[in-house]
Amino acid sequence: AQTVTQSQPEMSVQEAETVTLSCTYDTSENNYYLFWYKQPPSRQMILVIRQEAYKQQNATENRFSVNFQKAAKSFSLKISDSQLGDTAMYFCAFMLSGNTPLVFGKGTRLSVIA
Amino acid sequence: EPEVTQTPSHQVTQMGQEVILRCVPISNHLYFYWYRQILGQKVEFLVSFYNNEISEKSEIFDDQFSVERPDGSNFTLKIRSTKLEDSAMYFCASSVDPQETQYFGPGTRLLVL
Image (cartoon, rainbow over all chains, first blue to last red):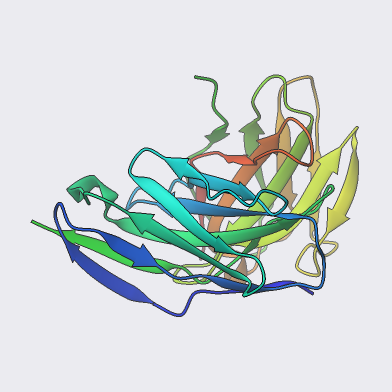
């Protein structure tokens, strides 16, 4: 079974600074997808970024980028120029290729401080 | 931008009662999912649904749970006899195909008393 580990239960960052959230996963498969979802206080799950395992290039979405290290099974999220609206719970998630469910980590609570 | 919608946003029920949670997936999506999140815990998969049948279900999804697509737009999760431990946030998600991103609705917060 696949597992996702987020080792940082809580983090904080000053507004406009950069922060990196860690995620590692365990799988014996080669084809899969990785995601970061954001859950603000409203508790809605919002997709932040997606990475296909077959792509070597790290995904980027505006201020959000990932550092995908396939051999190390590591998938960290970097948030640049942090904004107060980035305050949320961030979940790393894994999905095997095919019609399979998402497997989530326990989340990292990020607080952006003014 | 199209989005997944869920109703109700909050539901309070007595233990042993039946509840139905409703979801309207994104219109061109064919794969539907239910997840739940007990307060303070991680999001857990319940069930996936495609072509009017369950594709996969977790061990959480026991005989008390059922899913249905009663018409062309709604996707429902029924809990037949709620238990205290069913209190959680229930998320519906949909995707256009299994390789694509699952988009989540805003959730239904269920409280069983």
